[in-house]
Image (cartoon, rainbow over all chains, first blue to last red):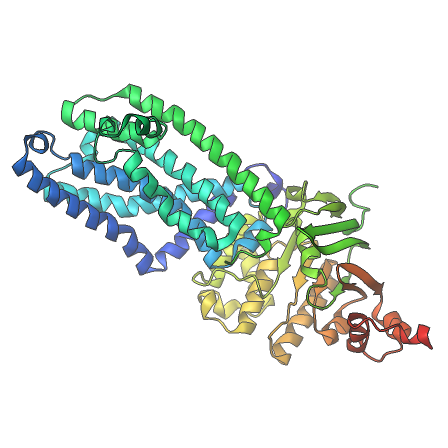
Length: 271
Length: 252
């Protein structure tokens, strides 16, 4: 029984954690409803706003779906991070982290399970919303094809990097740091230029914006919807930046975990 | 010394300092394989920090601790699958059923034939009829048995228990102690129990380590401790140690 537990990376341990979160999710209608509720509300609000603007301005009449597309891509970014962080926080709420930390589960396996869960949670929330967007506003996100895959991959990578960093903060500082899990991504909302082009920002702020991988995705989406041009260069730059962000977040997480072991934070995972 | 002939646990001048507070102050002890040892001491004596260092949850400030032949926490992944821990203060996920919880932890610990193992352990701990009930809807005694089932799922060579019968009624507590005795006798598992229940310690433990202010104050069999302190119960010995009273026998 003990042999496989020693190996460096165990898919079975990853599956165990995914199963643990799946059991939790399916046992709670409130958790499932929450996954769909906000993305639907957001999509409807911005969709109707776009419908109104399209009747008033030539820009929105020409580039149908820019606002609805932006809000759905934003939800992929936000919900990707939140799906990662909430699964992690569930362990804190359940006071189960101690059981996990003394088990053979490795940090890399834990993180991979959280990534898989963020995709599952996102799929549960976003697939119905994309179908509703077709029905209500005639905007088909799936019609973006390969571009959607590139957008999705880049946004998820950023969401995970932020999720990993926030999980490290919570491990080190307890649930007092929980607020970052809910709020940190909103810093991206103005800086990553979700609803407007980077050119709108003052020059000095544009440098910050271009340091954020999602900025490239939202610029790429606008280029696709207004000029019908897929900007592969933007996606490659976003991917490069994401690699840097992901590596930095992983190093920060490992440093915070080591600090938590030194400070005894893993013994007291409350406030 | 090869790993198999080493004691189950060997702590050498183990120290933990949190900022300016010394929680564990240079303790050394060894636990031979098999047998049950009690780790006693008042609140803040350093028991929990000691156990946390044995499990690799806390990094020692100085000193070393070897568990089942491996350095903790550096080599923890070599041995974590051979040890386990139970405490009423570390809960199991409440919304998951007992079966789901045991399945998750069985997979984490790399248990083969998991369905059979869950059935076996559920039968041993009288949980078979409750397996599909959410853990949060169980009584305190049932939750303790579930935590124990999780702690035994991997048939550990080293079992660390933190007040395993806290807040249980006498009947359930006796049932748990009987099970631990039987488990020790059949598996030869090494157990370290932190407890404030002196009757439990007298019944289960062949050896007692008393801690006070981060140091080991005394370390012997219950019988010899009673003799040395001139007391009839371990509770009286505990009070002597906690309150710093001199050993009666020595004073006389």
